[in-house]
Image (tube, rainbow, N blue to C red; front, side):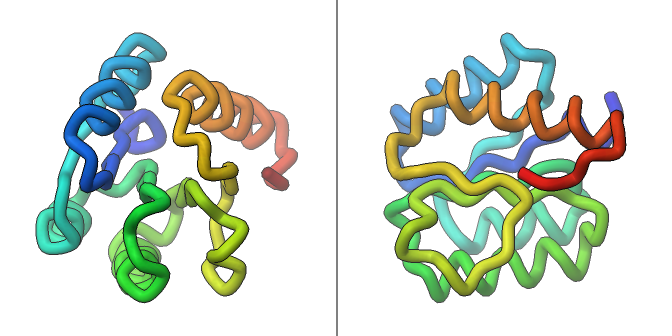
Length: 123
């Protein structure tokens, strides 16, 4: 499976993380779920470099730090920010509202990948 189908999903809510992973796997993604910033950074540094999803309950500072690490280790990766209205300073390819609906997340990623294949990079 290519890196564009590998997802690192960071959420402190275990139930949401499990549901998100289930839906993403049903849509053909390989998913690695983590529940702490330390775990997320470790996975990024170990090469989980396709797609990085954050959750809205993580602080903006922690999210910014992790996105920075992701960009350094995974320069071609895709960042999905959930809960973006308060996270205006963090750059992401995909920005979603705070609903954290796993089906919406999967659709947004699939749409982005489809547009990327056609050369349309805007989210």
